[in-house]
Image (cartoon, rainbow, N blue to C red):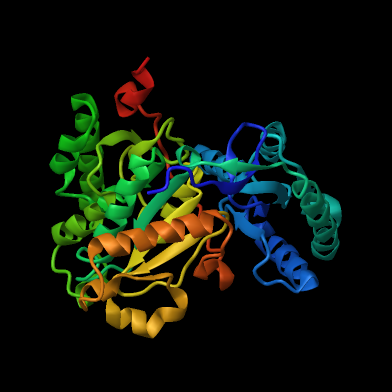
Length: 411
């Protein structure tokens, strides 16, 4: 692997670097969703560019939630974001003025429109289109600098898994992760609800015994959550695709992590401090309750992005067509038959491993090359298709303890 690879990046005021220069239009309550969507759509139509880097994100809830606020702040100040337009109805609980001030403090241009003050739908859409143009002009002035492996963060998730996922796409991502970690990049894997049964194996890979105990505890929390709620992370499509148990699915999901030591356990919005492999705990803290969902690929992609992921590796056996706002998603198809049907939505055909046309190592290298290409500016397939899925829900998390990031204790 070439350790001297450079990626063209945008330098942010906090020293982080982005591989995209996205303008985010963010609604702060569902009541502002339509207006925000119209601003994005009309901006793109005016530019005659349906793959424009103007992305729609938002939070639908009106009731206050610290997790939602923290996530909104994290994604609006992500290194791939060059400017932000906040759209408020005017009476929701999201602290819009505080959010605006924190985005501005990050060095990004940002504006706020309040629909109730602007005079309603049409006038806010008009003002919003003008605001996006101003933000684009300011964002285009960001300094271009080279970016290196140790500054890159790559997340991974699997969705629409089947019996091929754990023997082709997922372990191939694991090979890619091993190469990235060896180059001192940051790699994040998650889905603790799909790692039930793998907690002891992961604990053995932790860089300290204390971190190992934290990993076991977070998987036990996920298992308790699903037991109380009466369901697990196992969909009918998984069974139709040949998976038989949650444990079998877990082993397949686990293989995405590769074989590197696990350097830390983080929660949504935590940014890993140094190169290495990290586990993201996505199951909320506290007692299980409705209204705090966890099983959603798109919501978990957002959580990976909130942890700083520049690129997301998304494996699928049954097939998935989603992408994401803010960070490019690279789609890796595990099943050769699925790839034949959905080739136009996929970046990598890992199913050729089953057909004897490639080895795991070769597909791992292909995935790595895709990371290099996308980080260098090439659009992933989901980007080209204009996918900008985004889900932000209600959750609650306690801060991580000192044992979760033992690398911070190294002097």
